[in-house]
Image 1 (cartoon, rainbow, N blue to C red):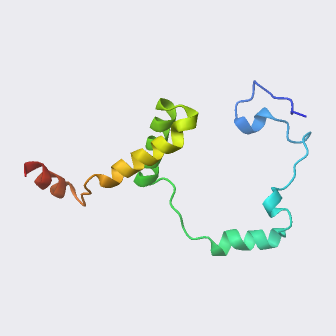
Image 2 (cartoon, rainbow, N blue to C red):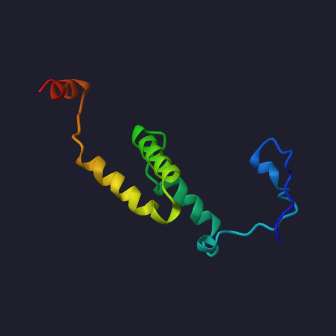
Image 3 (cartoon, rainbow, N blue to C red):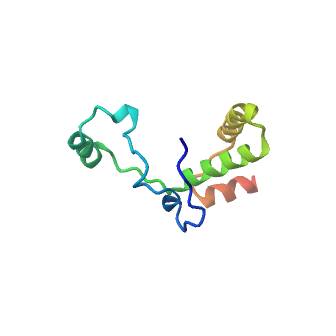
Length: 103
């Protein structure tokens, strides 16, 4: 059964009345105690920056592929795009790029 949607909500989280809806844990974590989950999230996860230049680059590539390719061909198109990027020369600094341009 689909929950009622509040189309006048100002935030996506408020689009559903969460007090009325049954909430269940994800199937993979259903049998893991809460204290064990908290310990994992506090101690075992390494710092992982999410807003880096490389992440933004991948998002741009995936968005471009998704908008220009039909769904059945997206995986192949993504792989080709990533392979072609690997073949391009890499530069550590702007100076390296400028030197390469002059040659």
